[in-house]
Image 1 (spheres, rainbow, N blue to C red):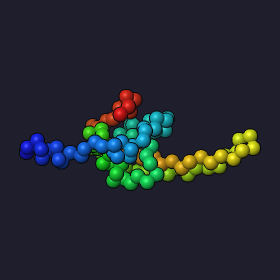
Image 2: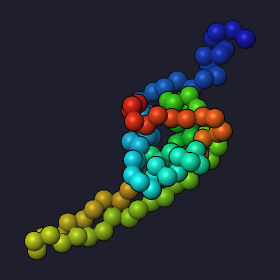
Image 3: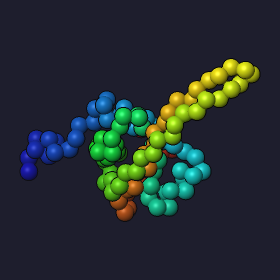
Image 4: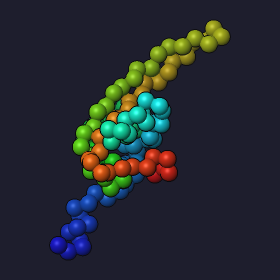
Length: 108
């Protein structure tokens, strides 16, 4: 296989792929998933599972087995008589193949 064909097979890391992964979520509950080879990321509300999988595989060079997503709806809060609305959030729990790791402490 020539170098050109190999380069064509690998997805190019573009700005759109970085936009599909906003930030890793580092909480106690999210870090407990590391024993199951899972990492949690904050993603845009319109991101689909296939887009998230492609972005993780291209940016971090790992094999993704499964992607689970969940949407946390924002709620209305009242502080000192003023109403405020928290925005909706979406997170993706990414399960990596056996032996694959991502070090989220160092950043992208």
